[in-house]
Amino acid sequence: MLARAHWLGLLPPDVAEIRLAVDAGSGFALERVGLRSHAGLLGECLVKRPLRAFAAAYQMARRDERRFRDILRGACATEPLSRYSAWSAARQGPSRQRIYPRGPRIRVLIPVRRGEGRGLAPTIGSLRGQTHQDWRAVIRWAAGELRRATPEDVRFVHEAWRETDHVDDLLADADALCVVDPGETLTPDALALLGHAAAERPELDLVYGDAVHGAGAPVLKPDWSPDLALTTGYFDKPALLTRALIERWPLRMAGAIDGFAEELRLSVATTARHVAHVQRILSRTQRPPADLIPGAAALSRHLQSVMAPVESDVAAGHVDLRWSMPKPAPSVSIVIPSRDRYDLITRVCRGILHETSYPTIEVVIVDNGSSDADVLGFYETLRADRRVQIIIEPAPFNFSAMVNRGVAAASGDIVVLLNNDVAILAPDWLDAMVRQAARPEVGAVGAKLLYGNGTLQHAGVVVGLGGRAGHILRRRSSETPGHLGRLKVAHEVSAVTAACLAVSRAKYDSVGGFDAEAFPIDFNDVDFCLRLGKAGYKTVWTPAAVLAHLESVSRGPAVGEARQRFEREAHGFVERWRDTIRHDPFYHPALSLTTFGEDLE
Image (cartoon, rainbow, N blue to C red; front, top):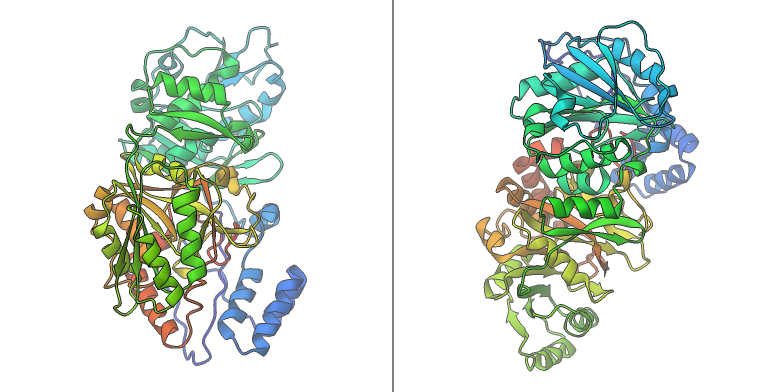
């Protein structure tokens, strides 16, 4: 993302030779290779993160080499987001400006609201230093704002803000529009990089880059995430809006200058289809990410104007989207793979049948050969409930096959896969998941799952985390907002866990369900979500459905032969989804894949 990158990895003790190759056409240069000792890393860990150093020493004493090296790498090869300034300073290098072919004609719009005129000087200076030359800027002043002189430069014009202007008028004869706030400064290659991306793909509606807030906090954005864009406006600065996008907007006026930026973000979020993300810091903005969150009233008005089947919903002080429930509400089949564990199966069934408010529910239990007399007696009781069916599947444990068997027997329009070690915490959890799963463009839907102590267990899966896939922000506070505040709202992710996963029956069948041959026990849910994505459906995680999950309590940890089986499935997952592992589109590449937090790599 910056001029330099650092990498720290393990050398096995039997290494005889190291070969490093750099593609001459890639623009990369190998500057330095060094050898670090365990002792040196342990010392660095002790300075940077003392508690982890003691944990590493403990694992070394236990001869658990995997955990020992993971702790050291997590401590020494990552930095907290709060240390972005130091992290980026270590990755700066000599400026190497690339010359790009002629890009689009760019119109830079600078709306100057009351009291913002003092911030113009640095903004104008950053524009004059752009390597891309084909741009013109118009400075639109609010009524009554004292106009300030700018350097003599024909590329700048000053005009009064006119509420009756259409956005087409703001674009004039340019190919793309870039809206810049007074006080915002662009890096010298910002317009060149944004314009180059737009020129490379003529079908694009929007190109945006990353930013740094004035306080020094990085704004590291995911690739295009429409739900997140609508509720957080994360893509806002810097961005190029192409003529193709602007010409598709309904005929309307620019409106008041104070509300223009918010209306513009909402229009882009609901209109843009083809979008590119330049994964580089391209601007420094004074506006913190929280300022981009739309007001509930403005969001509601906009959603009504575009006749979207959704309304704004204010929950815990955050604006989220509440999607319409089909009428009548679709029937739901909840598939629960289980074996023995009377305490678990009774709790989850009680939560579904007696503590869930959804009107039409079917429970399908797929039992893997229970022998517990209490469980078998409980099944006899359940059989008296017409909403329950029990399938006995005594074959060797194959989670994927059990899920597929349960779905095949289910009658619901929506299928919910639910582990037997999940506890229902609120009656409306299923309503929140069905509203998402019923959307035509949505495949799998995941829930916010908590450990028994109330910390986060599942807030979405990042593909590539830990080398394969993992749950982001595990064991953090349940109120953790996440980078850009995304854990407060429903948003797109690459995958969710099958511990609680909703999907329409038709979409489940369209991709062939779970892959019982390649992934009988692990990685099956992530593989399933990625196959849904490949078929054109997005995966959504929602904080509106909150449940407790005692992760794998009924299976226990994988050791011995089970560990070997896990590694075989992991290898198959890597082979199948290598490209996504290299870049999860909903996780910024500057963020660490080593730790389960949102640290800098």
